[in-house]
Length: 348
Image 1 (cartoon, rainbow, N blue to C red):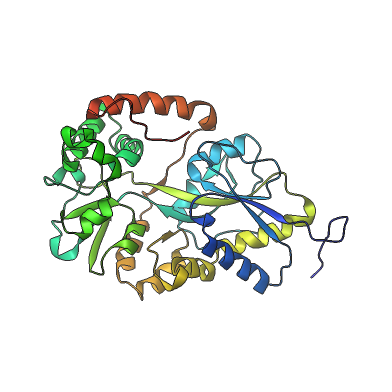
Image 2 (tube, rainbow, N blue to C red):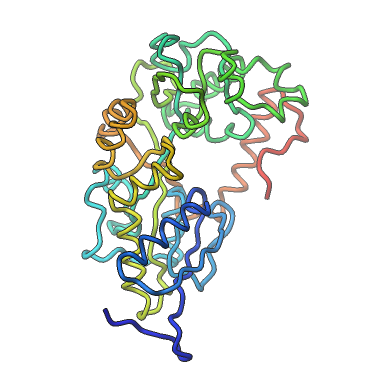
């Protein structure tokens, strides 16, 4: 293998801007180990980055981010198109179809998530949507309020129906008086569910790693009154090559992207620290292996195979318009839910 060095004879590092799960120390160690085992010597410098509020710095070589901002990053010239020699062939086809920008692929999918309705198998009422639930549910409403509304609106495509869903979620949490209580700021839905104070938990599949050992039923939340959700949307994490990457590092960066999306590496991530993490990999080939550890992955695979699934994305004006529109909408939803206007949901 031929390696390029900097002027002082040392390999210039790959500058990797990350957010979310790629920021754990265990993940960093695992990724570096795989990189070294495949014959690479170039150092990796991990730099934390909040993709929802800031653009990456211009020294980035690789970036990982939520697909919500994919169009904005591509439009602003931060991402390089993925070359034909690199692909994530084992990813669910609908992710490929719904994550292009101007008919080009700018990122490879790594992981995904969506609101999940979780219950113990013995308690399952076989509800088709959240509107069929008429008892208290463990819901982290305060931090997820805007996301629930976006899901509800994209499902119903109707403001009145979406607000009806939001009102119902407030009632499932315990009503407006409960939400206005200052103690709500410390609400822990997982503990409440583990104590069996309620039958259902509205969260994410990875929450199962924090639950007591049991047989669980998981469905992706349907925020409507319909029996079937025709437009389920998923948050998808991508990794992309930065447009500013220097030629000497380009191949090493592409090799790192291949590792991050390979079935073997993704399996190791999903079983990080010798524990099943209950993540949702974008790589389809991993699910049969994970199903050997927990049969729940068979049913999750069936749900994720649907071609009706979509990727939650915002326009290329995300960084210019999202925050302003978000604040207007949140103030409206706070007022409707009966919370004190002084409460803040997002820290800027």
